[in-house]
Image (cartoon, rainbow, N blue to C red; front, side, top):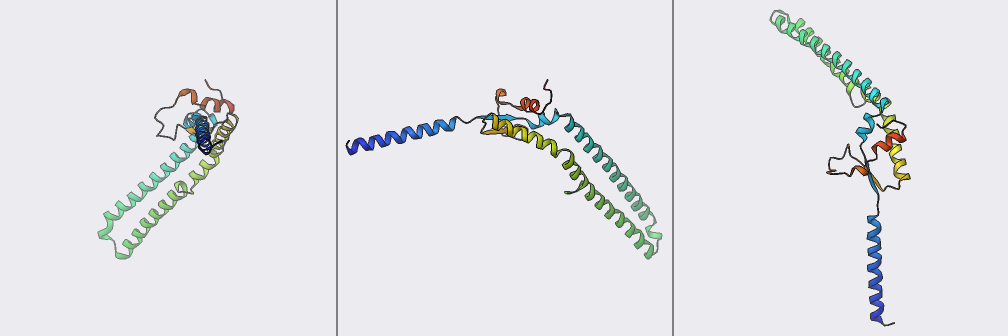
Length: 179
């Protein structure tokens, strides 16, 4: 075999290998789910979300009551301010500051980054989300999917073929009836 034929054979082999490699990359399997749809069809999630909403509403009501009380105290102070001795003014101002500080601490305790609402959410919602995630992972493994996208969180999915939507399958795998 001549050198020219060898070079041609190597080029053909490289082109063939590149073609096969690119074809293999096109053989990837994709699917998507809509986690919002999935979660909205899980009764435990709906109940957990209602519990969180009720807690949040209760605490918001308490916060509003505290704000109203502070506002009343402040208006009362303003009405009496000119008649009060300096010592009483200072005492009333400190009382209002203390109420405002208590309000801020209450808000942080209930709604802060590590507050009670966050902890309750972690306790009630996270286990359900983990079940859904594990079901998606299992679907990917069993179905040999290379990627599964979440339609609920991906605003850049402009079109998705409904045949690729595996949301109802996830619900079914979790034991929930899909109408």
